[in-house]
Length: 250
Ligand code: IPE
Ligand code: IPE
Ligand code: MG
Image 1 (cartoon, rainbow, N blue to C red):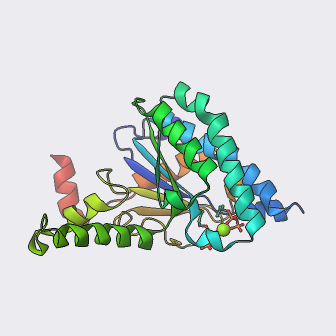
Image 2 (cartoon, rainbow, N blue to C red):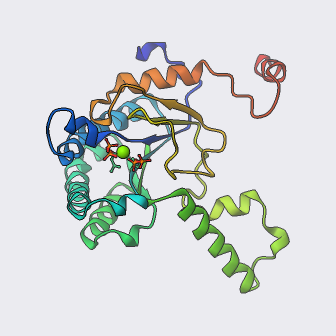
């Protein structure tokens, strides 16, 4: 299926809500954490799939602000798994020229996670291929709130005038900074919701939901399937189909 993808029309930024680990495990009579452990292979598949195609940005929703409300042992297991997998995957990220970054309230994570993430970000910082962004302790409302706080502080200190605030000024303070907005968002697990993921940055994203696929079963073919659907969509950005066709014929 990969050869059917038009490499001249790739989404620049793909974001993924990796959902359904718990149900995947429970369906086999196993504990939820077994699903989280089996999610690592799917992360590798989507990352390598994007890197091979030449996608520039991949943002993975790995742990939301709301996920702090899960049972303590599940949260602890997720954090341990995060440290382990960042450590184990580092050589593969180097091999694939992947640059790792994080967004979210990173200070809310355990110290061991913060250190491992900082180490991997530092080690990969000069890589020039795929930008892999892990959303951790992240929520869209948190992101917009922290951006507004920074703007308010700048106004208070006199470096910014309220009349200078526009969409670009606000967007620059979001945790995604200068990265492009999301073109394509994927969600496994069968639910059709955003779950407080990138709210602003998803404004004009195409949304692709996998109805019968839990995250641990995600493979490159599923990525290709979503990109093909994306490429079959006319993105109009408020304009008419005629305008878009006239423009692309130029
Ligand atoms: C996604 O899978 C992983 C995280 C949210 C960390 P879930 O753990 O939400 O799995 P389900 O949705 O309960 O099946
Ligand atoms: C969204 O999944 C968050 C992540 C994938 C990290 P959830 O399982 O937390 O979402 P809800 O609660 O079903 O909306
Ligand atoms: Mg879930």
